[in-house]
Length: 552
Image 1 (tube, rainbow, N blue to C red):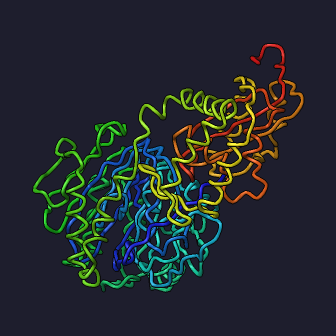
Image 2 (cartoon, rainbow, N blue to C red):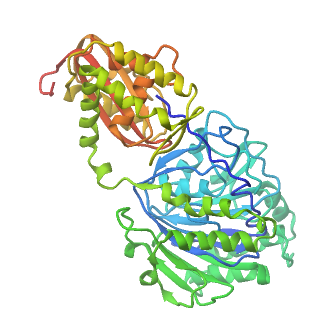
Image 3 (spheres, helix red, strand yellow):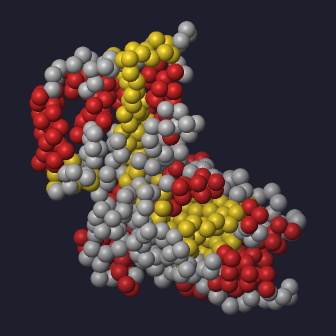
């Protein structure tokens, strides 16, 4: 069953600011080592370094009108260090613990895709999403099949992406389509504020002795390109590679508009940075950081007067610090100064809606057992379950279901489907309990492992397998076999209630599975899903006999 999510409605575009109007990025290497350099050019200097945790369940913050965009949901697989100016979860760039780096730059030619079947994130949160779930350039590119940047964003940007293996790519959204340059199509690993094709054409048209000396985007690209080529041909290097990168950043800086300079060492797991207002170079080592989500995120004022290793200078994140960051950035950004305080608070408190999966996440078996128990409560005492469903009634606002602690869920039918489900339960007869089946659970687990990391949906596996095929891997089923899937959420009762209400499904087939008298066994698998955060697969059968050596 697919969750229907209500997008966040605010009075102004949350991520429509013109960040990174004149930024520069490049990847420089010397034959054995490789680093990624970034100049952030803008007229607001405030910023936080944020240590983001793995195991966090998230739903994208969407700025468009309610219902026009379907927000992505996911659980972070990797911790990361990001540089944020307009709030936590909305970074300008960063690196994750797998060595994936993403940075953005302004691009006037950007045109985002119109809403379609893919889930949406903002142009800033797209960075956090990728750092949360991907470990390679290849994975970032592949995500375009299931996630897109929301169409309402007015900040037109493109991205340079690199990973620990040495892969580099430029990613642009032109006329609604992702345009990628990587491998042989990326002879120069750099990007400024023109399309990559235009930048490369300019570079190729320069005479060998030409000296591009202005601060224009194309001149900065050309100087960065020549510096990258020179680093690879110089042996031995005259300075440590990160120092060489800072020299290049200084050469292509935009005077007072270059407010941050960042160098990522993907191979060593270290990030260096300095700012216009605090010129000493500071660094953070990833191997000193705690990325477990059971401890709070850590932050550091980018302009604090420190030098050297600042890993021990990080302090616990607070909501107040984030609201102050957002308010300060909005008030200093010319076209955002009149933004209502209510919108600033919406962005500032947004991270409170993310949730550490913590012990719940590692105890998958407890969730799976609870799903079976909820099925059996509904089957053996449907009248009692009707009373439980009635508790949802006060939380409907038209077609929105606003459950406490769960956020807003957009439905297709509103309270109508709930009332129908309640009526069904009141008239239903008691049914026998479902017995848990390890064999059916393994079949369910196969589907979770296949589709969860890929972020795909539906009952057909990547190999074309259907539920009966997966069950046959472990034994012989009899009578009937079926499958339900719930996406998003952590609560077993919510999973089963959503299946029973079956909003938007004309034949109520999920409800029919829950209450089928032909099913006597069930197996459950619960785990993370790349797009919706979690997924729960329930496989049913009338009978099941495991193959020799397998558990029934």
